[in-house]
Length: 307
Ligand SMILES: [Zn+2]
Image (cartoon, rainbow, N blue to C red):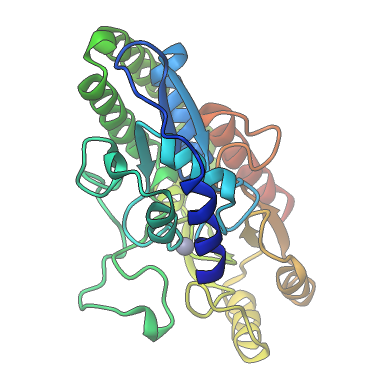
C-alpha cells in the first residue's frame, strides 16, 4: 500500500494544480459511494459534476482507490462520505490527494453520518483489533429511506454553502426530492406489510436500517463478526438456528461469495435473496428510488417463494 501511495504522490506532483473559480463551472464533487453520488446528482443536477470512488459491486469497506481516484479527489471542491469507520481506505486516499479543501472539518468535506440516528452503537469502546469493522455503530445507514431525508438536506445545505449563487436551485430540488420520497415511502411501507415481523439471516451485518424500516428481523449473520468470513462451526450453529426458528431466507449483496450462503440454503431449505447495498450495484437499481424498489420487491418475493 505504502509503495502504491508513494508512486501516486510522484504522479500527482507531476500534475499542474487546476485553478478554481467559484460559479464558473460545475462544482466537482467526489463521493465515496455510488448511492451518495446519486443523491448529490438529484440535488445538484447540472450545477455539479459528480463521481464516486467505490465501484458499487465491491464491498465498500475494502476498496483500493486507483490513481485516477486520487486525481479526482485532488481536484474536488467537495468530498462526500459515510463517516464512522465505513471507508477504512479514505484516510490514505486523502493523504495521497493532498487536497486541503476536502480534509476533515474543512468546507469541502461532508460527513453524511452527522445527524443520523445510528443503530448498534456499542456501549463500550471497541477496537478494530477485536476483529470488528463497525466500531462506532452500524455505518450502513443510507438503507433507511427516512435517513435519505437527512442526507439530502445535508447535501443541499453543503452545496448552498459552497455555491451560494445556486442555493435556490438546490433548495428547490431538495423540496422535490423530499416530496417524491414521501410518496414512495408510503408505497414501500404498503408493499412490505406482507413481510413485517419475518426473520432472515444475512451474510454481512449491512441491513439493520432497511430491516428496521421494513419491520423484519435480522439477528444472525454468516460472518461471525463484521468482516470475518464464516467457518464450518459458525455455519453449523446457523443451520440449527434457522431450522429451529423456521427461517427460510438468507440475504446478501452481490459482492460477497455466494458459496457459504448457497451451502447453508441447501442444508436448511432456504432461498438466497440478493439485495443491493448501493445504487447501481445492479442495472435495475439505477437511482435511489429504483434501488429501494428493487430491495423491497426482492424481499417480498423472496419470502413469498419460501413460505
Ligand atoms: Zn459493514
